[in-house]
Length: 420
Image (cartoon, rainbow, N blue to C red):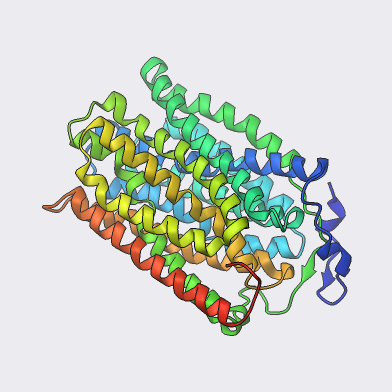
């Protein structure tokens, strides 16, 4: 699909204006592309956001000699690697090179998944799941987020929300599959079975993904720092993204292990990750629709505040009904973030270098995702335990909501767009 776009690169000035303005907002090809991004998110975010199951299982079994903070570094690096390569991947997408990194990421995810059953010691798991799966996902995610913007503008929030739904389905189904198969056939064959499922889904993603607009060589080089110098709103939003990701993944990382510590049966605790992720899928689609209607930053502020409140309340929910309820609230509200980033950054500049701007923001997010869960793990080992984790992560989200508001005000002051 549109393979010539990987070769022919145009300058910003030569890009036909009709191509930029005439967004299909649907149609067979657009929906095929969206099917590809849903499949890709199932295999990337769906896999990575299932880490809570691995965290709890490793604490109980394979890595029981390691502390929760040490084990969480594997999941933290996995999350971070989704975002850290985004600057390079986003830039490559802008100039037309996206199929090779996308395919390479798919193969790396599969290779590392089939190697996990052979892992015996901590650094094996770190290499395969932390770096391997993480980097493989990172080579794909930024491309999927950027390519959706080529096919949808007015309905962009909804389209990205549907893409995110693929990640929610993956992170709902995969923990259930893993939990059932680990009990029946053991961990090694559970991972091999997951690998076969991912192979099928990733094949669909590689077949369906395609850009619409011709590649553009926008000025500013790889980093595109001029975009931050030109837009104080984008700069504040970048800081906000880092702060958000310090706290966003704490609850999803530790919710299963905390439930077990609170005395809830491990058989039920493992399903809390799936419950939160399913709720996140509903939250992603809903946030995308609401963002299109009322402005992405307005919805983002509300959802971040709700996620912060849920994170602080989580350690005090020590019965099955309470912790299930807080998982649903957290999943619904936190699911908005990945989706609304695209619409928010999209209105802070032109389409010609959107991949680079998204890449820069996601790389900054990756640093926050790298640091957040291990810091939370240190709090989990403290006297207050998971209560301290809730206060730390929840406070970070509250502060992030205030930064979104500042960025929104700066954007409104410049008179960019019509909804924020």
